[in-house]
Length: 277
Image: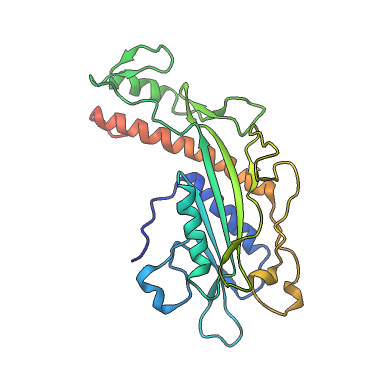
């Protein structure tokens, strides 16, 4: 059975693009990135194919086809247990995937459409707080269609994003986990505690098992040779994560997500009003 994936959100897409840049900028010739396809590994796994967000393919000299050596799962609005299961299986059910990266994004508070109609079909105007019909709401939307979401705190790009007088994206917590193939059991094991790299106002106390990379240059302890098993000396160098670039991708993704959510709500109201935007 092939896994069916939900359509990715703009935030999800921006983060995947950031990870792609990390990989393509450091990996040697003979590698390439593949998106949204079953893991390129064992033919008898067709009954239960894993479809990661992306996989790094490497073709050994003399091999007939490339094999996946690394997979990446990015979870947003997804249960941790489900995400971890996918990450572990990427290693446990294959022969060549040596590293699996998991990026988990959590939004606080969870998003709720601020423009849901009442039972009588009216909407609460975001400014006047009066209940108005769809035509009035659309007029208000159209008057501000040239504007864009802004952080609640202009000095904090990670603060909630507001647009049309209401919140469209809350604060986001971003963590990364590194899972590797155990040399003895050949099963997936987590290499480090989760690395917290995004979330400016989140407080991590001493009992929280996070490595804090929000202001420190924390690295994964991985060499390229841990991903592509090789005696090649050129691969015996660290795989480096640029946390600043990943945070910038999340900032861009949150902005795109706010716009996407807002336009979805506006189009829904327009449809109800018999006017497709």
